[in-house]
Image (cartoon, rainbow, N blue to C red; front, side, top):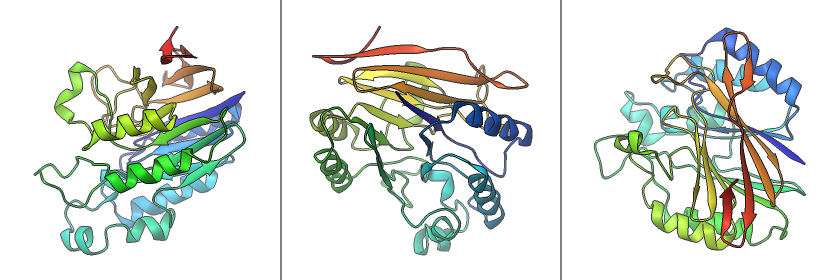
Length: 264
C-alpha cells in the first residue's frame, strides 16, 4: 500500500518552530514513501528564508519532491522577479522546477503554475500552459495501468464556494479535460491555506492547508495530508496540529469506479 505525505505553504520566514519539530516527528512515524511539497516554501523569497527552507529539507529522512509557488518569486525586487525569477530556487532548493517521481506503485508529475507576470494585477494568481498540460499527459502515457497517477501544482483546480474569490488556476478547464483523458487520479495543491478534498471530473482534487506557518485562516489549524492506498482504493487523511502533535481528524475513503473516483 502506497503512503504519501502532502505538505504545502510552509512559508519559511513566517514558520512556527514547534510545529516544524512536530511535523518531523509525525513524518518519522508515518514513514511515507514520498513527501510532496506543493509550493510556497518561503514567505518573501529572501536568501535567509531559502536557507532556512534548505535546512528543513536536509532534515527530512524520507524522499521528497517539491515545486515552487507564487511566494517563491520575489514580490518587491522586480528586477529579480522579471530577470532572474528562479535563481534562488535553483541555488538552494532544486534545479528542476517540474520534477517527476516514478515508482512501481505511483507516478507524481510536478507543474510550476507560478508566473512572474500575467494578464492581471494580482501577481499571486497562477496558470498552466498548454505545453505544460501536454508535458504532464506525456508522462502518464508511459505509466502502467495500475499506477496511481498524481499531478502536483500550487494553484487550485477546484475551490469551495467560500473561497472562490481566490481564483482558480488559469486554463483550468483545458487541463482538467486533458488530465482526465490521460488517466490522472489525483491533483494535489495548496495556495489558499484551506484543507479540502473533492472529486472533480472523475479525479480527486486535494489541497493541504499551511503546514508550518502562522498565516492561518479562520477555523483552519496547521495541517498536512496523508494519502494511503492504490489505484483502486484511497484513504485521504487530514492531519491537524492539536497543540502538541499532528493527529488524523478527517479521513475520506474513495473508490475508483467506471465513472472515476467516488467518495464512499
